[in-house]
Length: 229
Figure 1: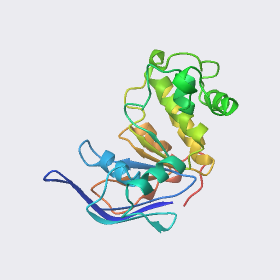
Figure 2: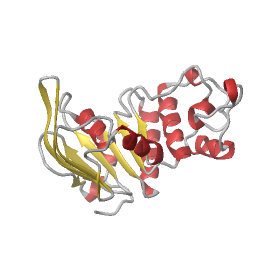
Figure 3: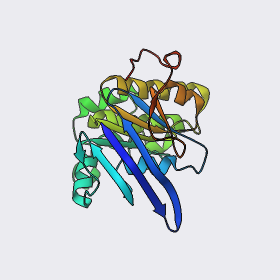
Figure 4: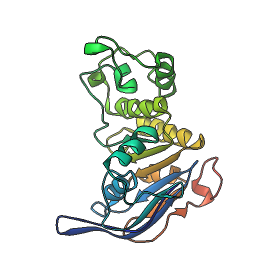
């Protein structure tokens, strides 16, 4: 559970967020929506503790995290969070397998970690059998799925996603949306900054950045096999 209460952020001399209040619950996908420049990505980064806030408060599972220092934020990223950002966070010059486990033997001669769990994560994201390929050879949609495979391997409880379908064709868009939905159904919290109508329709809740003060449930007609809040 991630909750932000009245948070505001100024970058340089420009106010970006103005008293945003949002509640993101486990087992659901929350969409951060609004026009370009409204602060969707900034709010996502604040919720993921990537960006400090100027005013307001934040809590995770009821614990106040507003004043977390660098070490505390790093522990949160290490133990609970995974990120799928617009640049995918993929290392093109490394193998698919390494991009999932982020572990290698001395001098990087072979990938280490739980290799069976790595293969299972790739299978779940449609990348079975491609662990030895260079990640740079993957398409944009495949890199999105590889970033999600990393989150599955990590067993992250909170997933932060920024514009995941911006450059995807319709087939890959549907695959990525379904993967995020499945991730949420396992009891994880999924928070997505997006302007994609199909992605928004797949989410359980939406928060209009800059226009309202809470995340609201999507109409039941827009939900797929999801319960209400």
